[in-house]
Amino acid sequence: MSAHRITEESVVIGGHTALLMAVALRSYMRNGGFDRVHPVERAELDAGISALEAAGNASRQLRAVRGNTEAPTEESMPESSMSAREAAARLGVTPRHVRGIAPSLAGRKIRGVWRFDPMVVENELARRNRKT
Image 1 (cartoon, rainbow, N blue to C red):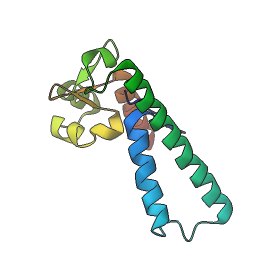
Image 2: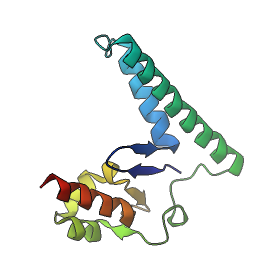
Image 3: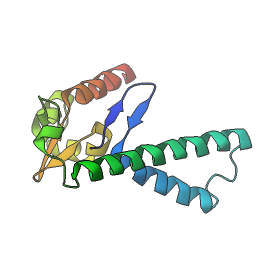
Image 4: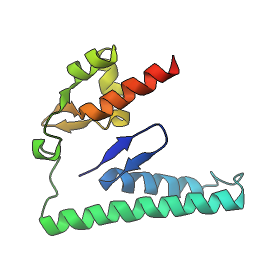
């Protein structure tokens, strides 16, 4: 199960997404992507990437122990979840737009249908309102 929570000051990412991000960032780093970053900040980035790798690997091991390598299910979503249409109505955008930004809203595709955690949608709405 991947966990995503977005607040104004932080992002918490877990599960397979964390591992994917770590792999992408390591590759970027190896290809010179962080060459202009100060060594102290580079060390912090490296530590962050290591933390992403650890979270992703822990999630992979936990799924293997549980025998759960399947796609997300309704049970892995919060008790109440929103459809793309409901999230769009709350945010004042189209369902197509919501599907396009689904990763930033911690959207999960379950049996071909996008579902969203209402708390994440509310946080996004609050963030958008602060911008105006």
